[in-house]
Amino acid sequence: MSFITRGFGGRSRERDDRLPPGQTLVHDFPVLSAGPTPEVDTAEWEFTIRTESGSQSWNWDEFMALDIDEVSTDIHCVTHWSKLGTSWRGVSLDTLFEHVETEYDYVMAHSYGGYTTNVPLDELLDGKAWVAFEFDGEPLDPEHGGPARLLVPHLYFWKSAKWVRGLEMMPSDEPGFWEQNGYHIHGDPWKEERYW
Image (cartoon, rainbow, N blue to C red):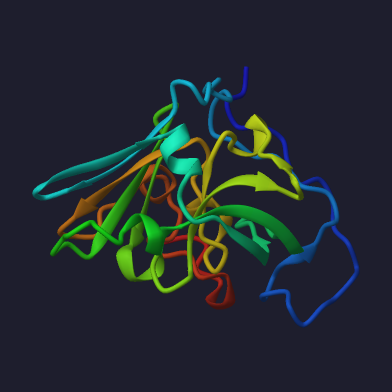
């Protein structure tokens, strides 16, 4: 039994200036996961930011009471597909970090199911990232990371951790799951930072 699900299955000949180098436009939403899809009930869901001095957590109701943004953005997968003009709703990382104090510059995102990915903190702030819970006007399907996933659309989509449960602040940039398995430590699609 394979733990990496089948996703992107073809190439389109459409070209668009919004596509980074080496990317192919898709109109569906391919599903790729490293492992089984965890079942996460919103009654049990919690999101925590851990710093060198403590932590701050939100349950689902507290999270939903925060300011919610409407986000329209393009997404780009390291497996060469891009989906343009996607619509999301979520809470900005700027909102979540408003009352968080840290001297650390790096983040490890943790997901239900054990997945991790690293992201520099400056790639998550200033309107660059969200914890998203809706896609295309509907609650986020579990296969796409529901009930909530990290959304970091300016980086390859593996950085937008599905089933996100928290962020851990780190003093140095340590690799997460895919980064330990050959993916680039940063993941900028416009620079084709796919692999080490």
